[in-house]
Image (cartoon, rainbow, N blue to C red):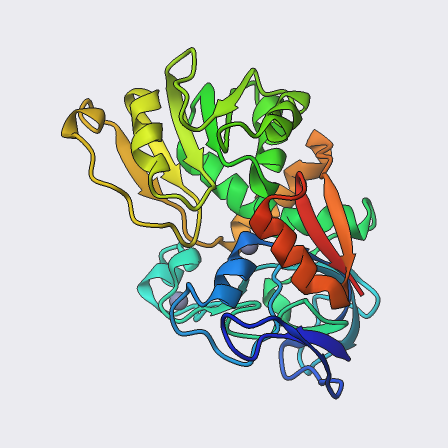
Length: 327
Ligand SMILES: [Zn+2]
Ligand SMILES: [Zn+2]
């Protein structure tokens, strides 16, 4: 197998030839057909997440077909198309796992961060954490659903019944979520980098009723806002944009420091919450809903050996939607 490997944070990924790995008990091996590039991959490469396991193959939006089953795997079969997400394994015994919050597991294993991911021609995964994808939809189009879509979905659920929904940062997650929100009859207000006219018109094309810069006050007070961008200074801006009792959901795994702000923008029972990881139930719920909505993902594909270019373009905001690597 070939892979793009991170040997040292802050350095480019390196093209590497590796011996084919065999799945262990309860594991599957997948021939990777497509792997999305997520903002979290940039955080891993940049060393912004604690305790990276190096060397590591990034990538946690994997679509591929099973070509080997480890001992004891009975629920999946050779040739089946599956998706492998960020949540690679949970302990099942900690209080969070037992309480239905495996996204907060005390001993999780995350794909592309703690175990090798999908910037490769093959990947090994825990069979219990792979989602059967069926045959509908193209591999490349499905890949962004596996993190941008799933974490976006979890964020939307946590945002609550909000009719007027603000989305700060209109990238891979927001462009999927805008379609879900519109399907649910919500109004989407899209906030982009100030002056990013292309992203604003992209948001309008996906049904946003308003699109503007993150420094702008929307024409209506929002019921909730979800922040996908990594800039902590968006938190006070979003708080100031939500109504009394409104909620601001921080959906990223990493955010720059949040500046201090006057208490009166939090007053009146406004809330700030974060969303961490996903549960398998999130995946089951969202992947069942996605085909009904008819979500169309905007993707830019790169050959696997150009993963560094994909990461650089993501960093610079050089495409709309999501980047996807293909072997
Ligand atoms: Zn656990
Ligand atoms: Zn991700």
